[in-house]
Amino acid sequence: MGLFYYHHHLPVWMCLHIQTAKHTIGRLRPHFLEICQPEWSKIDCKNHQYDYIDPIQCTSTNKRDMKEARMSFPSGHTSFSAFTMVFYVVYLEKCHMNRIPIRVLRLVQVVCLTAAFYISLSRFTDNMHHWEDVMFGFMLGTTVAIVIVSIFHPYDCGVVT
Image (tube, rainbow, N blue to C red):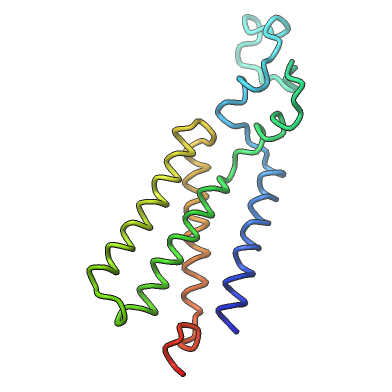
């Protein structure tokens, strides 16, 4: 019961909080200006070079892309990949240490963590997130995964019958 409850409800909780943070914080993505296509002729940078320009007059008519370009923090892809891979790594360590040969276990764990790392890195290199968005998403996913696995009961691993 414990594994089912936490395995299915905490990730949903994490995703809801990530989406709430994206909508409330609304940090601009690195490629925002490319999507926005502001009217540069209406922006006076010579006399107001240190002023914050708000609202930005965008010429883009694609409302979906404009909304998406304002939701950078935190990285949802990174948090979900970190959650799934760290969960799997720690779960294997806790529940299958004596069932799987150690070299195979370590290889699977390294592959999982490498996949999570490269997914996270791709969000930054694809210009979809700032490095802080990716780092916070990775920390959030890792924390939730460790919390879930740390509250496992031995019955959840299928070890005790």
